[in-house]
Length: 85
Image (cartoon, rainbow, N blue to C red; front, side, top):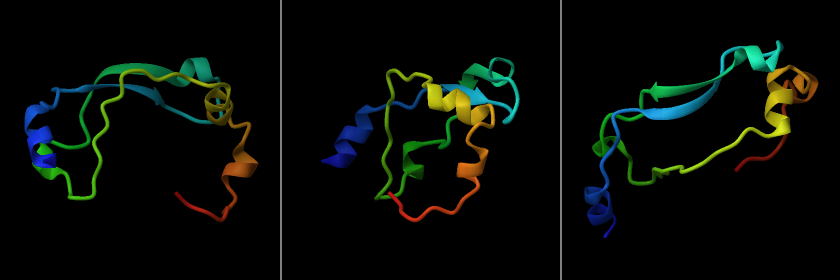
């Protein structure tokens, strides 16, 4: 059944991405939206059986995003924290 669902889905030529080009500097200078970012896979055949392909319709930038990019969480992010997903 999964294969039938994937056969109907067509990969776009490129994707739109929110990109931070540098960390520890002014967020407004390093944040940009890229409209023609290459996809991480070239075809649906490149997906492994346990891979998940997600079609994101909307996203946003939260306060924690620009604080991390500005370097405000550097002491926390450099620590090895236990856990996992």
